[in-house]
Amino acid sequence: MTSQTITAAGTWKLGDRTVNRIGFGAMRLAQNGEALVSGAVPRDRGQAVEVLRRAVDLGVNHIDTAAFYFSPLRSANELINRALAPYPEDLVIATKVGPGRDPSGEWLPHARPGQLRGQVEENLRQLGRDHLDVVNLRIVGSDSIAERFGALAELRQAGLVRHLGLSNVRPHHLDEALAIAPVVCVQNMYGIGVQPEQDAFLRTCGERGVAFVPFYSIAGTGRQAGAVGDDSAEVLEVARAHGASAAQVRLAWTLQRGPHVLAIPGTGDPEHLAANVAAGALRLTTAELAVLDSLHTLHRGSGAS
Image 1: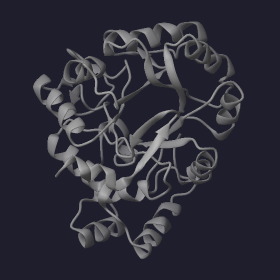
Image 2 (image 1 turned 120 degrees about the vertical axis):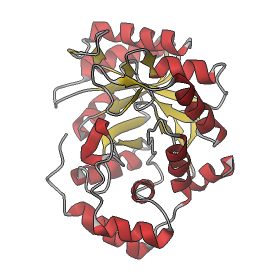
Image 3 (image 1 turned 60 degrees about the vertical axis):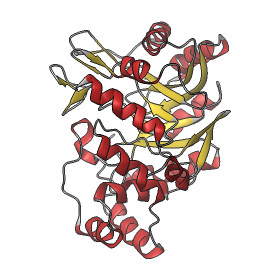
């Protein structure tokens, strides 16, 4: 496989930065097995560094990470720094703020507006950057985000942050944020049969020129533990027709939801990385899309936020 493979899926602009639509999620880098749990088994450092460098070699120029992606002995941000600094000029690193974990890995209350600068600065330190390309405000619930997003908008004005995004949000949050500052992306859980109620929001983002960046599009209900391996007969049949894996079909379907949809599949395995990138070149037929769309909408109303 060559780096040209990744361009088959096209590109999108996050503000003034152009990225390939197949990116890389760093959540799985710091450990083997389930992510975001205390006591996780650290991943071999050499393997993590190899995966990151291979991703860039394959043309990945959009990496999603966070300071709270860590396990004992390993931090995703610091692995990115070690593997890729000095960073390629076209590389866009997107981080998330809001959640936090203490040194033992236990979750802390989400950051208040006055604490967000500290989280941004922690990402800067770990990544070895003087500014962050994209910072996503991740929230839980439906309450107003104006005060917190406003605090990030001030950091953008100060030059610590180049672009702003949102994560795990509702449509009204995008309206609220856009009244304060530009929004380049929305990250929400989404995939075949995963939160199909997000379909309208996905389309709204496209109409507004905002990238829609699904997470867990492969793992689905397995979330940070990874794919549960219970793919339906429909997904498996499409996979067989293309000589592809179910994971590749899931990625391809997601990308074909719109030109503004970006994929950020995560892995610590070099072979899985190559397969994920190759999925960008997989084109599903109109008939196959219709079958998968029907499967997707069967789950409407059953998704979790």
